[in-house]
Image 1: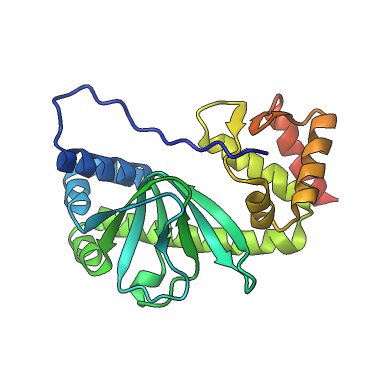
Image 2: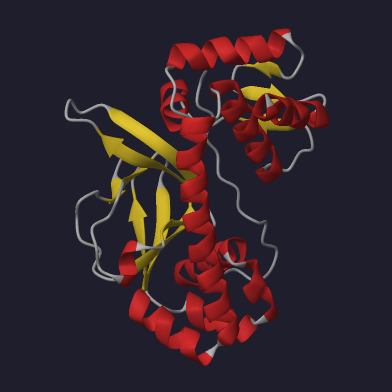
Length: 252
């Protein structure tokens, strides 16, 4: 399975923007993706977008480093793609998940200035924005919509982490893979087509399996008609059938 990585930006047809203006616009767009509730509070969104500073990281560079202390920053991915995970004692990379523009790299460690739980490696050229947590908190006190949005994000992050741990212990691998495909489909622009951008070994590690098990399960899905696949492209001809597969497998 080959990695096919791409990033998209919203076409812009207005006046020519300076590099600083373009970057500010991209930060705002990423915030809109991460926290769509702020679309109803444009002034708050603008103030938030003006906080902090942006960082450019080359492909294969580190954005965050596991074990280093967070000095009180929230990190938002503005452009590009990032692999989150850890290296083993032998130096092998184990990916837990991947992130794209409009997603937070770390929402939890900033509040206690604790250690980063994972390393973030840029798999493409990346633009990431660093927000000072103290400034975000100050603005949250003034703007209830921002406070509610922040708390909702932290709650969702915690629930997703718990669900991911539970899935590794109580769900068979085919179910985990099917559910992962359904989540990716929801995030795509198509009703039945998605592109798997992760490398096979990274996706397998993320789902708690070996690359061989991943390949075998994908082949079984194809043979049973649950999916159609060509290289890194996947078509799901009957989404309801795939959902039914997950429910039937869990209930057994």
